Length: 309
Image 1 (cartoon, helix red, strand yellow):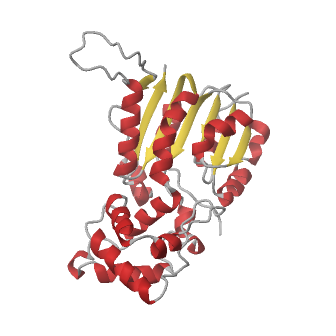
Image 2 (cartoon, rainbow, N blue to C red):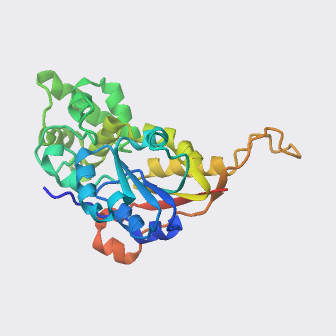
Image 3 (cartoon, rainbow, N blue to C red):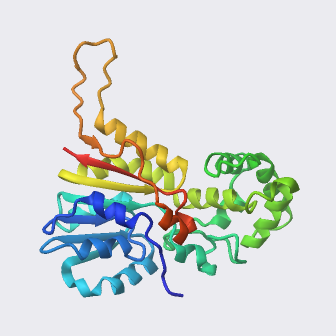
């Protein structure tokens, strides 16, 4: 299957990066290489480092970026290891970083990856197939209380308690092996009148995928590192797709812009914490009407930008 991924907010992200032809840039979520392609095409003496934990994404991007030769270096890794990965390449600082947190169309549409409730497949959902934990392990091995917490917090599903209870009951009879088996269990937990508002499995599948890949934990622990890696004037562009991600990015940007922890009644700052830069986007940049018409998956996308001082 061809690796396909529509790069959401592509034009806006490239504009916000303020690409310098001789600069060093990182695409921390390489995917099919959409953002990386646009960055590489603007470099003259500069360099791009593309990072992705999905081996199939690396292979697709390598082919797509082949024309740029040694202008691009591709690294199979998780973006949380960006600082160490760049250091191993002799890179101390960069002029721009792109993080697109969307799951690729390829991952959703490739049946065997088990990301989608639309195909009957083994429960997998690993972005990095080298890791051992799968969606099957979560569904069959997590305590009911943990399943409820994940579906409630990561899926923001009001029927989390009922869905977790139905899963726990079903797996007592036999392990839950496939996406369609899980679909049927979720369908039985959600009232019939509520199934008209989109597919009843959507939020639970999202929650399990986030847990399987530690998506929010990895993002939270990486944002400060990204800003520290930037050279003065460098920009970090982060595209999120749901409120939990966006909240983490917004909070991290605000904290790095104004890290002072002094009580508000203090006349001057005494904590010694210094601002690392400026939040460029006081409000997130959203897809335009044309993009929304071309790609319905972009409707929840938000771009936030931070500039290092």
